[in-house]
Image (cartoon, rainbow, N blue to C red):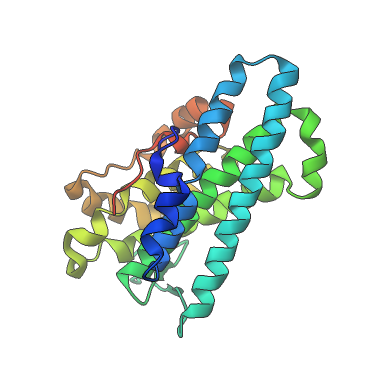
Length: 253
């Protein structure tokens, strides 16, 4: 996801095309996500501002991110209500695989894509909220609404869910349609789990039951997962700003 504001976030593009027909769930989700780059871009400039100016701006951007998070939660609730069946369920893997985690299965490829991208956008949003709360002690009042610990826990859970979804997305019967949609969520999940010891421990367990098998399949579509042995290196690079999910190029629909 680019950190530069784009025309896609303008009201004419988020609402105009849908005046005469109902947007699909994924289109609605992407319209919400389109508002994030502008906020991320402004957050990036805070380092160059005087402390008092940066703190005031950070308060505004934090409120914007919290609002975006609420919109993502609202979208998720609406998406769940509109479905006559469960959006996903846990599925046991083959008995010969050392399994610490089940994989996730979905009613359709479109549902899997929508949910994995929802989880990705939520990780990016929550990671930036964590970053602002950690960088600006003056924003402690917001911790009544959101706590760094609960945000981190949610990021870990969503990162694990994304990795558990990959076995479904790279199914052979989906051909390239599933594989081409995995890069953005997969990289985001890996990076958020690599941030701290708790996440890396989960990543190592997922490696034995999920990631090794993903690596074999996904490499053929040019999506490479860094080996978990490099997790500490990734951790050192990403820790100052939590995870740099916002630097990942957003997928095209």
